[in-house]
Length: 551
Image (cartoon, rainbow, N blue to C red):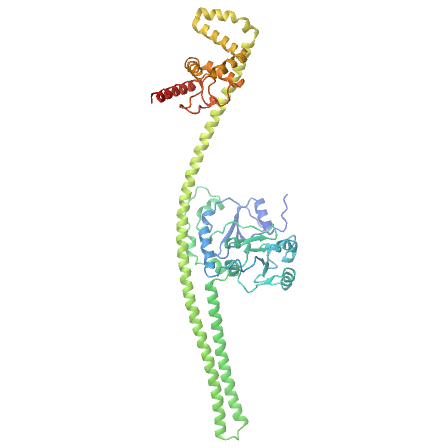
């Protein structure tokens, strides 16, 4: 029986169930796989600078999610949005820089070997890495800054802490050349800004493509055919129409970066809070001034009316002056708020323009995907046809191979018959019978046999004779034409003898003919032409030389 340690699902009856989870631990996923329970596991994708947060989706079934993933064009648009407002550094002025990114001390992505690991657990890896860089920066996690780690990196590597800087500012303006961390999501984002990512722990999780949750919700095939395994059903889902824009980022606000719109809203809230505080301070100062005036009247009842009036007048002037200062500050704050509101409106217009451009890009991408799907369908059909043709060709090859084996076996059998004693003893009877039935062919075949045998036996003398003929081009030309016209097979046998005995080289096509300089310059290789082709070639060459002489 399989044991699943620390699995909370063991106490639940999962028969006839399907599980949808968010950041489900590996132990539970292994349990679901062992129980053959269909499941989907959602995680927030580490690419947080897109138009909204996206999901990393894992499932117990295979499904092609390319059509729901953020397109490369959308990612590039979002990256360029940052680079547009950031200055590009001068490489000759800024040294080669490594950024060490800190992480939350209780982040489960840094839980290895039974403990939550910290940067100082990877000092040997950092020692080797830092040597390749001229400058080291340290960016602690916004939710967890360790003074001990900051001091350690500062003393050991001279690391400069940059806690107040936005990580995307560092990536967009090319302040760093590489970023390293245990398993930070910044490692997944940095390559899109042209910054190298280095994992300090090779066991850190790697993520798939960012999946658009709206497209995922509307994908009928994913839920019905993939998740619930209901083959043969069709339908349409329009769930995403009721979801506000940027919804996932607003729900998981701590997972993403602070947008320009968010910064402006935060600034407006700060200004409103400050104005309220100023109003409260003004009221308190007026109340204190009135109390002091009343107290002065109570403590000095004997003063004259003129002195008391002068004192009241001075206090009133001081209060008026303070109120005027506060009113000026409030007016300045209101002017700043209006300026911020205008900037917010401008930023909102830019966001709308960016969204429109993104929608156009997505429409074009959808069209390209449709064209790609059609091309893929045609390719699959072609591959299926090719597979059918390959199978037919394989069958033909197998049939040819069987026929060749059969012919080879019959050839060996025939050769064995020809070499047998009985075949040799009956040769005279066959010869006589051939003369009686087919006298002409029988005599011709017999003469050819003895000629071939004589050529094989007398190769040396024959080679001397061919060398003698080759030194006389005219004679060799006539002999060559005569042999090719009437006895092409004999010509080929003589050519083989000339090659074997070195009378001519392997590139010479004829042992008995040397082409003239005015004719064709080079004869084709004998291995490429059969005797009939050589005969045709010789006739063409002769006709060409005749035309040359006429000209």
